Amino acid sequence: MRQTLRSAQTLLRHLVPIGIGVACCWALYNQLHHIDFGQLWQSVLNVTAFQWIAAIVATCVSFWAVARYDVVAHRHFQTGLSQKRATLTGATAISVGQTVGAGAIVGAFIRWRMQPSLGMVMSAKITAFVTLTFLAAWAVLTAGSVLVLPTADVPITIPCSVLAIAAIMMGIAFFSPVLRRSGREIELPTLRAMAVLMVLCFLDTLAAATAFWILLPAGVDLSIAQLFPVYLIALGAALLSGTPGGVGPFELTVLALLPHLPEGEIMAGILAFRIIYYAIPALVGGLTLLRPLAHAELEPWMAQASGDLDEALKRNTARAELGIVRQNGGAILHCTGGICGVVRTGQTLTTIFDPVHGDSADLADPLRQIARQQNRIVCKYKITARHALQARKSGWAVLHISDEAMLNPMTHKLEGSKYRQLRRKLRNSEKAGLVVADGTQALPFEDMTRVAEAWEIAHGTAKGLSMGQFEENYVTHQRTFLAWADGALVGFVTFHATGHEWCLDLMRVTPDAPDGTMHRLVQSAIEAASAEGVTRLSLAAAPASPDGHGIVETWMRKLFFTKAGGAGLRQFKACFNPHWQPLYMAAPGWPQLTLAALDLIQSVKKAEPLRNPQFGVAVVTPAE
Image 1 (cartoon, one colour):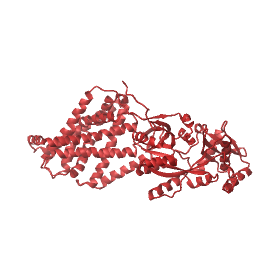
Image 2 (tube, helix red, strand yellow):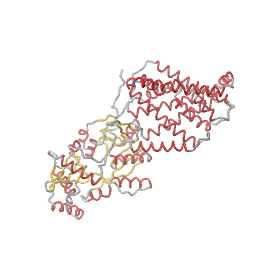
Image 3 (cartoon, one colour):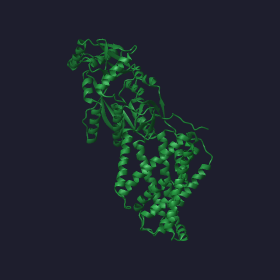
Image 4 (cartoon, one colour):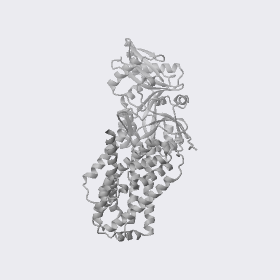
């Protein structure tokens, strides 16, 4: 019984579009029964060679734009397919699918036929992505054109509602780039991808409308500005009806929205348009499908994601804090310009800290191209002044975001007025009987978990991205110092540690810990680093002063300073009299930098960066 119902639903799903098409064609025939169809065809034959050529050029522009949807889709799903092959596949699928109808099914089959290595499931995903994003972009573009351009009387509430929904969807894509439901994850298109799709939709539909406009008979008094919103609305009716080529709904909609123009001449233009925009592309697409299929052409990636973090950390140029990639979904990226740590967030591909190998200037272009292959913008985060200067010379926008508290354990003393507050805190911890132990051996994870949970209850959920979170597998790679009072664990700190540098990461204490517990833990770590001959120790970064040089910069600084608890962090770290080293973030321009900053703030707050970033391989050779 259930199988019978499914078969009936499938049959009904295919019959409904055909029924709609038949009904619309019957209505169209009744409306145009008075027209001399011989004269209509003669009007088509009277189209000049110049009009045919100009319409063909406009059609080529339209199909190039709509075929690029597949390029965006392949980048979204990280298939690695080359732009050329993705564009060809997309153009073929769309040219055939829009003419024969059932575009989603036909498109998926054609993409699978042309790229069998992708598999049917991925081909269906690509088709669904292209279909849904095109419909979304079309809805936004249509709403905007109805508001701006002269068109039929459409209630203003409709386009305004569409634009409001679009704004909400963009907000969801920014704040929740990955939707999770019933154990499944759906990664939404990035804002960059949405912007590219909107531009492609505009080029596609404007070029198609231009081809239609060019083919209208000379007696039709209609500007492209008047025709464009009409074409968009008629296109939507055609797409939503599901009829082959949109035959029927498209014609009825155009005639209904242009009642003041002669029906015969409008129909002559539509008939010529269908020859140029539907029949010829479908023929070309069909011939393309008949060609012998070559193996998939993969993108010649310039990078390789490596999990060999330990090897990277052995380099003297590597920051110890790079160990954070064990937790934040990052990776060590090897590309033509050098080696760096990267993390992928909702909108951004971000390099964290200075390059492990190579100069920032050499990494700039490769990183931009890699980010582009993921529909993301590129950003450099927490880089030092030298690399920030290189970025600025390359034309990137640069922003001072934080200051890193650095000191030399070998020369760190507790003498002088600058250490007065630290000495007072250490005395308080000694009076309370606090005992600090180096947790190099087995760690009491049960007690540490209790402390971490108590800390989160008092301070809120731990932040993410470049801020560590308590996890057993993560902490086992770090140097840990434990604080005990009356036989109970009351606090601990962890450090990213390499042979040349230590960096403070986790700081956790219980609310009832003795005053000065955290100061004692950090001081004990400094003394241990000194004993091991470590000359660089970082107390990690604290947000820079919230004062900026403009409205946007000041606003971003204040937002970051507040979210990261800047005041408390700077006060605590200042007790150790560190040298404050400025850190910067950089992006190819101020719009990108603003978006990247907001994206990173959101990622720090949510503590859920995208896991398992994919970057392809260093050299890809197409299969023989």
